[in-house]
Each structure stands twice: as structure tokens, then as C-alpha cells.
Image 1 (cartoon, rainbow, N blue to C red):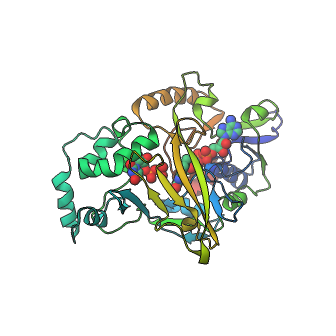
Image 2: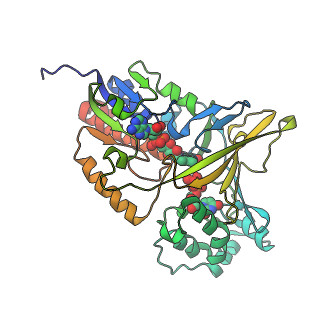
Image 3: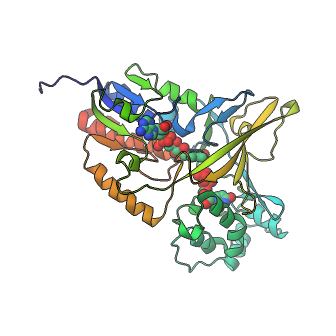
Length: 384
Ligand code: FAD
Ligand code: UDP
């Protein structure tokens, strides 16, 4: 046995978003650790934070968050902290004066071109006539043009992507536009995952339950720098931007931001303002990218309704890592430094500089926890 006294906290977790909260919950509930969670914001839940606005509408402060996953493990884990409301997200894109379903599917093609294609084979043949499958898929332009051709690419992807990222799709990794499938069926759901639901009482309520364990202490409006010297801890889980952790010594990693403009309008009789939860605007002449009406997502009935209008921008909170080769190279230099710090784990979208959805961050955090558990208690890890 070592003679050293146990520090005040076994683990310091920096960031109360999905990455930090999942790890805090697991370390406290499964390993009996004392965990301190700090976040510089005045709330928990990270970018998934939701709240009731001054009009009584449940809103998401950092843009619309829709939960979907193919991981039963992630779904089972989160189900301990929330019930779910079945919800399948649908999006319409305004193209050539029409509101058309995106992802591009049979209905999109029929309405845009005045066709009546009826089978998957007919729609595939339509794509095949236009697609450029021989293109080597090196970037986000190639990824779409290879599947549906230039015209649909320009109408649905080029303008939206230029506005959202401030870059042409040809300057972005193929993985960005590849998030959106191309379908031959009439399936007009935005996501294809088998599990599509929203937390019944919202994300913040789910996080409150995760962090309610008596072994967890949460300090808000608190920077890592406020506690790193003052508090004794065994190890650290860091979920903020990795370049900031290392004082940007290799230069800043680019992050894209968004200004969310919230507007509230009366909806007499409890109706809704938009025909779909989200209306996308791929037209480059329209400054915003999308408008989302929260009540579609939350199922809330109310006498007014709030929409979020996304205005992408370069400055502001770091929301999106920008997937392109030169940024990955810079990230790898930071990652090499991180791997030399055995007492600190870098977890989540900003700390790993990866364009991850919520469920992927939960899966990553559970994986990190399993490795901790294997080191701490091999028998427990074997049973997880
Ligand atoms: P975050 O939620 O960013 O949490 C990190 C926390 O660390 C923050 O609260 C921050 O304040 C804190 N922090 C950072 N540095 C410090 C420091 N030095 N000291 C103290 N605190 C610090 N995913 C989906 O699955 N579906 C969606 O529909 C969806 N929509 C999205 C829409 C937008 C506009 C954005 C930006 C993201 C969306 N996501 C969506 C992705 C989702 O938000 C992330 O996957 C998830 O929230 C990442 O969790 P995280 O814990 O890694 O990071
Ligand atoms: N995209 C597009 N047109 C659309 C929808 C998406 O060009 O109508 C592209 C755009 O580059 C976007 C990417 O596909 O950034 C991924 O879209 P997603 O809706 O997954 O983005 P997020 O919800 O993460 O902002």
C-alpha cells in the first residue's frame, strides 16, 4: 500500500456535456469514485442544454439536437436516466421555389423533375444517368457528385455547405456530406438509425439525473484554471478543445460556429408554424442555412412557437471541428502531446477534434470508462 493520502477527488472532469457527464456518472456509480465536474458555463448538459424560454417554449440553446443511434448499448445506458418520446426527424429543403424532402429520395426527384418514378430500380437508373461513379472520392463534392451527379449536388449541397462551413465542399473531407444518405425509396426521414427518440422531459433533465449521484460534485461558472492548482485530484478527464489545453502551441485548430436567432410567434389553437421540423436553405443568396421549430421535436403543445434560425460564422463558441486533411495533421500533433500525459484523458467532440453526434460521444465515453475499470478492477471490467 502506498503511504500517500487519497486526494480530495479521485477524478476532475472538465466539461459537463455528454463526454464529461457520462464519465462522471460511471466513475461514481461503478467505481465508487469522488468526482468533481467543472464547467465554465452556468449550466450542465454542454451543447445539448435545453431550457424553457420566456414564452414557455422548450428550446435548445445551442441549436436543435435530435437523438438517434444504432447502438443498443448507448440507448440502454441513457434509458436509465430518461424516458423517451418517439420522434422521427424530417427536413424540407427550399429548392427552385419548392419545399422538397432531403435526404434526396424518390419523392424529391419526382417533385423536382415532374416525374412519376415508382420503383427503387427506376430511381437508381435516374441517379445512374447523372452520377459520376468513376470519380475518386477525395472530398465532399466528389462524395455527392459520384452518387447523384452535378445538378442535384449544386441544388442541394454546394450552397448550403459553402454557407455552413465557409468553405467549398471540395475543401472538406468526404465524410461531411456523406452524413446525408441518398435514397431510392420514399423514406423521407432525415436519419436512418433504428433508434430515433427524444428524451421525454428534455436533455437537461436527463443530465440532472446522471449527475445526481452523491459521489459527484458539480461546480458551474468554473474554469479548469480555477481549480487545477487549488483542488487535489487523482486524474483528469478533459472534454474541452484540445488546442486550448496546450495553449495553442501548434496554432489554433479551426472550429466553425453558429449564431442562433430565436423568434417566437403566436400559434392560435396550438398549431405549428412550419410544415416540417427543419427547413433548409441551400440557396447561397439566402444568408441562413436552416430554420428549426422546436415544438416539432419536443411535441410540446403551446399557444406560441419558437424557431431557431442558423447563421453560420467563423467567430464564437467552438461548435464544429472542421474535417479536412491539414486540420487533422495539426490535431495529430496535439494528440501526440496528449498521449504523453498519462494522468489526463481527452474525450468528446472538442477534445478529440472529431465531428461526433451525441450517441457517438456517449459510446466513446463508455469505452474510455471500460478501460479505466479494467485498470482499476479487472473483475468488474470483465462483467461490463
Ligand atoms: P460539449 O457538449 O461541447 O461539452 C464540453 C463542455 O466543456 C462545454 O460545456 C464547455 O463549456 C466545457 N469546457 C470546455 N473547456 C472548458 C474549460 N477549460 N473549463 C471548464 N469548462 C470547459 N448531435 C446529435 O446527435 N444530434 C443532433 O441533432 C446534433 N445537433 C447539433 C447541432 C449543433 C449546432 C451542434 C454544435 C452540435 C450538434 N450535435 C448533435 C453534436 C452534439 O452537440 C455533440 O456530439 C455533443 O454535445 C458533444 O458532447 P461533448 O461532451 O463532447 O462536448
Ligand atoms: N448538407 C447540405 N445540404 C443539406 C443538408 C446537409 O449540403 O440540405 C451538408 C452540409 O455540408 C452539412 C453536412 O451535409 O454540414 C452534414 O449535414 P448535417 O445535417 O448532418 O449537419 P449538422 O446537423 O451536424 O449541422
